[in-house]
Image 1 (cartoon, rainbow, N blue to C red):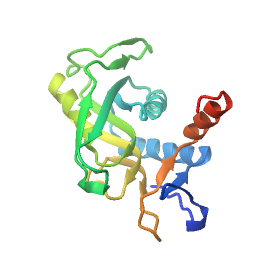
Image 2 (image 1 turned 90 degrees about the horizontal axis):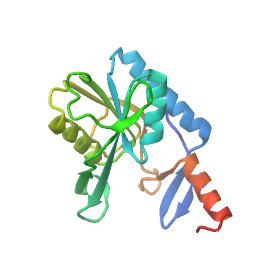
Image 3 (image 1 turned 90 degrees about the vertical axis):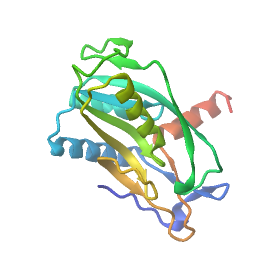
Length: 203
């Protein structure tokens, strides 16, 4: 597991929250570490499920590197109380229709019954906070496709307060030590999107 360290003075702050800007090189190293963990486990997965939107880029990379089919699920968590650490309760809605990409990279709707073909499923997301979204997606797959006998999970980042323990984790994110505030991770593509929006006057 890798670690990205920042000094207090190096953080940019926004509305009282420290921003952890991750470089392309750092993100690439995290993805490589995560894939290495999966390969070292010796498990053979039949299907990769990514949670959109944020987990889709990671799912595409995993699918191509590991050469396994890729299904995309959309899950949206709604806070039932004010956001804060592990005490926040969420209501998670999982999309009724999901995108499935087979070995030939054809796009179809997700087959109703996957149990005869995909018994070992790896679910990936870029970050796990409460774990509610990834849990809801797994429960949805189990309900719609009974018979899947193995579900493992992987994420680039897991917040240290999260009670959900993924099987594969690139990095555990800890609060900024001086203030105890959990940093907001800013990925390279987010920086690019912001710059493009500013350039074409969409902000």
